[in-house]
Every structure is written in C-alpha cells, then in structure tokens.
Amino acid sequence: MPAKVAKIKKLHKSSDKEDVACRLSNTPAERIAAVEFLRKQMYNESAPRLQRVDRIV
Image (cartoon, rainbow, N blue to C red):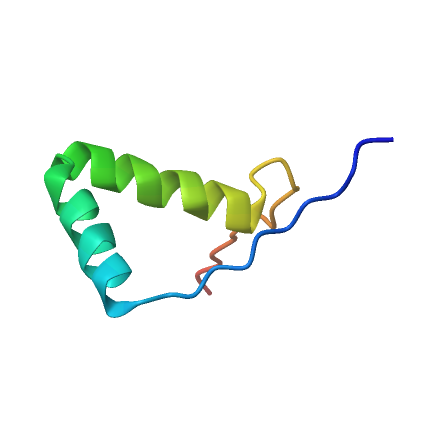
C-alpha cells in the first residue's frame, strides 16, 4: 500500500499576496472558467434537478 503523506504548512500574508497576484494575472475568461469549475464541483451537475413550473391562474 502507498504511504499516506501530509504536509503541514503555515500560511503567511505573503502567500495571500502571491495568490492575488496569480489570480489577477489570469484573463477574465480564465477567472470565469475557474469559478464555473468550482461551481460544478460544489453542485454536482450529474445530480438530478427539480423542474421549475410556473402556473398562472
């Protein structure tokens, strides 16, 4: 069996600045694609959805 490895890393303010700089270096289309990817992971697009029905009386 492969050994399980976990690395513990402290977060610093400098890493936050690096993350922001990395995100801002992407084009708007790349940023939207990243958000869409995370949304699909969160809401599991393969799950069945409820149908919306409007009824006017």
